[in-house]
Amino acid sequence: MTQTSSAASGFESFGLSRNILRGIEFAGYIDPRPIQAEAIPTLLEGGDVLGLAQTGTGKTAAFALPILQQLSEHAGRSPSVLILAPTRELASQINSDITELGQFTSVRSTTVYGGVPIKRHIEALRSKPEIVVACPGRLLDLHRQRAIDLSSIRTLVIDEADHMLDLGFLPDVRAIIDLVPGNRQTMLFSATMPKEIRQLADSVLHRPKTVDLGNSKIVSTIDHELYPVSQRQKLPLLQYLLNDGVFYSAIVFTRTKHRALRTARQLKNAGFDAVALQGNMSQPQRDRAMKGFRDGRYQVLVATDIASRGIDVANISYVINFDFPSTPDAYIHRIGRTGRSEQTGKAFTFMTPDDEDSVAALERKLGKTVNRCVLPEFAEDTAEGDGRQNGNTQTGAGRSQKRSKPESALEAAQRRLNQRSGGQDGDRSRRPGGNAKTHGGHQSSRGRRSRSRHRKHARRAS
Ligand code: AMP
Image (cartoon, rainbow, N blue to C red; front, side, top):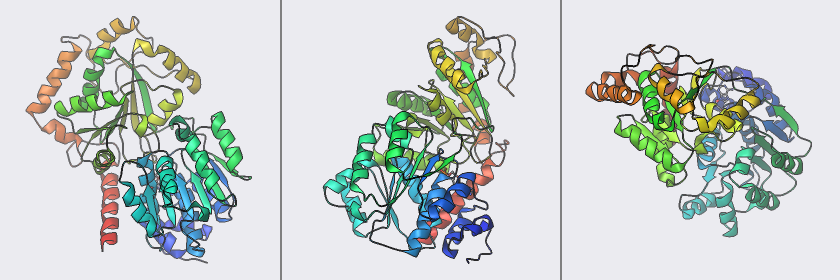
């Protein structure tokens, strides 16, 4: 029986080793999340799991902890665990969670994904890490070059399977499944279950335990509204929201890579600490953007759907859909970047008259209408653009309500920008350490997270 005086007491009943419990304590977990409570016992017994869960539910630890336990008990030939992830960002996030939880064990893990020189991976694989967290394309390249032997894999995790499908990676995933031994433990996680993923799950999982967290729902901690607006007014409205609100950090989603770059540039020119994240950027650029956003150096991340899933960054106060998401699921994924870990968050979605069909599809999926919010400064243009006024129109909560519109929305945004560049106080007040009140607990918890990471790196370096 393992014993610990740690805060991770809720995890003791799983029978995890003392060193793993120390890792859990270090990560600051006290009680298992529902997905962990349901999946960990089955996984420790060697069973397969189908997890209907998205990032933010604690699914990484749900599979990482049993994997660490099994590797501590029987270290076999390496690598023995393969974790497939659709994006580089998710792969590196999984790797850093495993490294954190497993830091008091001797288990090693590495990442494998495109955008970095393949030689680096070949080198890393030579040291025989037990766990490889990989994006499918680069893993297959390495296999073709005989730099990795997949015949030793005993545990396979397929994470964000529906995102793999969306990105066209399913053929690669299937090719990889053919390369790993059939006699293995398999876990498959997916936020949604389209037909192709159901078929994949049926073919790779053996009598799995299904853990269904009812993902296609929006958590109650997210306050989400639609903002009718014309195309022309999107940027001024975005700047208005970012200028007017009290927030810690925001993700702005655009439909195209080009728009992400351009919008980030426009925000930067307007004085915001903004950075783009999109698929045409090099891997070092993507890493710098994500790291800077996590560390708080950038307050606004302007991204394509590359960041709509998988990415778990603490304390994102706002999600702003600059362009309407292409599907209802994409809407749910995107806005799910905020309101995480029981914190509150706000999601603002811009809708132009062209988006009406998509809005109707979203409301059908949610089974209810989403509140429309027209800010007085933008109302006239919206009405023109939309050709209608919505019945449940209201003004943004907490914003000053003006009945008349003495200046155009563009002028209003410009005036705010001028005020902004003229006096730095407004800017500073939104940053941690400023005087303004931020969303509950954001400042301190982000500081904690960042301090925990610094401690971790310091330990590793020493
Ligand atoms: P994931 O869904 O794996 O991306 O996890 C989302 C976030 O929840 C991550 O920041 C984890 O560190 C955190 N987390 C996972 N399990 C727990 C837990 N039992 N208690 C508190 N936080 C957790």
